[in-house]
Image 1 (cartoon, rainbow, N blue to C red):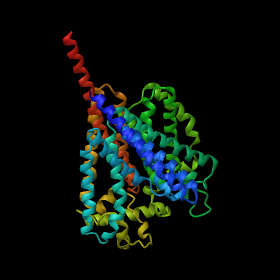
Image 2: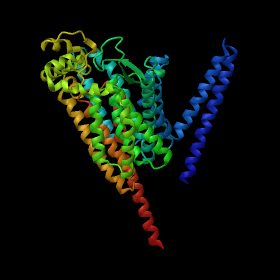
Image 3: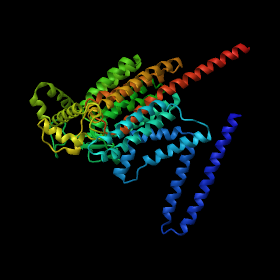
Length: 503
């Protein structure tokens, strides 16, 4: 009876969409008569047909638009299209459409959103802190415009948590991220091999002229890959978060074609991380690989494949990369070594300013997005005179939270990470009980991805919040997925027992 009712509702929804398409088609047909350029009407018809098809898919199967949302977000497609192709924002309409899908499916199919409680709690906590800082911040008018980016990021995370509710969907979400790995990593490697740094590949692979071995300024001939409209260090942070997922996917895929694409994603991810020439990324990469081998060790067969690929790929690492990584010694060798590296000197001064802000405002901070506002005055206190102004940044996630939101911000971040790691560990156990060891491995990989944000956060602050919140959203969804899969197995077991008793 329930299946017939659902089928009937599906048919009614399709009929309603068909009637809407006919009405819009007739309207456009009448508009062509009064339009100077009929091609505009053709474009409009195509757009409406594609839009209606997308709406139909979303209303009947919301997983497909979820995968595109994940792909679009981590590819930074919205910003790329706006900056490099002059298109209007596609993210805001997409999020508004997703809200409509949630309401429609709740009203039409009785599907209440589930699993959004924990993530919503941390979102509300964060919004209360940031918006509350308007009461004491020096320039409250700068808070809301910058908070807008975070609000969109949080909405994405909540949608991902709500619609990722099965192990199969979780696997496809991870594969959507692997496709991003393949695209961005392959473009980065191709750009390095061909030395085609002036081409931005449609905005998906931007190369920035930066110091690598000390040649500063124009004409130095040193380029760092920055990905789709990021800075090189930020790009490396997002790649490192994907690295444990790529490793786990490579270790678990059994079909030859899937294994091939998984290895492609892993090699592309590692290659792109190296081509950012980020010193913090090197530390993060080493620690992530270590954590994966400790908590998610590969099988002997996979280990042999890893050794084989390492032997093939290690000689291809650029010599400039090793020179860049050797500059770590300057931090601990001598003060002169530090001052010779302008990048390190600037970061140390900004770190010191962040510490002083936290010292002066330990409980609530100076206010959301107010580090750059106060940087100049604190820089003078420590004897540094520069003109960074709005370009200044703490270059440390913890100093960013501490200086701007105080102990409240640090407590929020610590509580959220503790909750996520504990929940993922519990989900791992539930997946094993449900007979899904591959999903248990995904839970561990996501935990390592979350830890990677803290590791790289020692050297990088949050600049592009959408990527952080997307990964957090996937992490929040996993415990719900594990409980659901375990319940399905339990119900099947109970049904089999009942059937056996009736015989």
